[in-house]
Every structure is written in C-alpha cells, then in structure tokens.
Amino acid sequence: MKSEDSDYPNDINYQEEEEFNLNFTKMVVLSEKGAFVQAWTIINMFSCLISSYIYSWMAAFGHKSGYQDLIPFIIIFEVIFSVHIVIKLITDYTPEGETMPVRNL
Image (cartoon, rainbow, N blue to C red; front, top):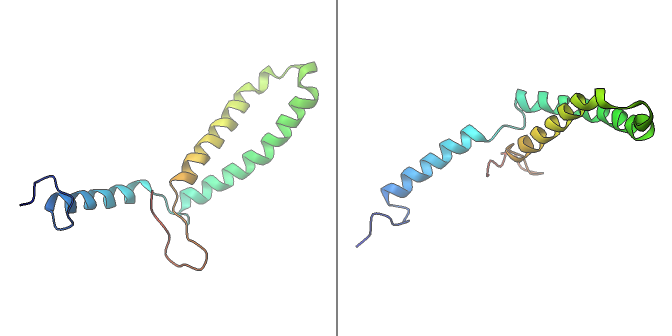
C-alpha cells in the first residue's frame, strides 16, 4: 500500500508538485534573449565604464577634495551591480552546441 505522502511518479500529489514547480520556474527564470535582460546588460555595461573612472578619480584625488558628493552615485552603482548578480543567477542560458535554453534553478 502507498501512503499519501509518497514520492512515486504516478502519485497525484507528486504530479501536482511537479506542475507547480514548472509554473514557478516559468515565472521566475528570465530569458537570456528577453528585452529586460538585454536592457539591463546595457545599463550594467555603462555603469561599469562610468564607475571605473569615478573610482579611479577617488583613489587618486578623493582624499584632497573630498568625495562626499559622490556617495549617492556609489550607492547607485553598487545597487546596479547587486541587481545584475541576481539577474544573472535567474537567467536561462543556452549551452554551446545546443538550441534549447537550460531553465533549471
């Protein structure tokens, strides 16, 4: 006899759980070719370029002239970089030589 909490593939609870996981994955995982991911990649590239010059200036001259006015920009850059890390973690990818993207979390 099977119990109601069994993990057999023909168990109705197991099938419902698998369907929920598939729907959840579709909601959470972003497409690497989607407009949001592409736009965020461009924002991240500009942030990388601009922040490198700001951080270099701070390293060379910040102690003389004070860089207190740049703190909001530093926080914005760090938030952008943190969000980019999270987006990369939940974006699907297509392995080399494959045509279907991998959507596993």
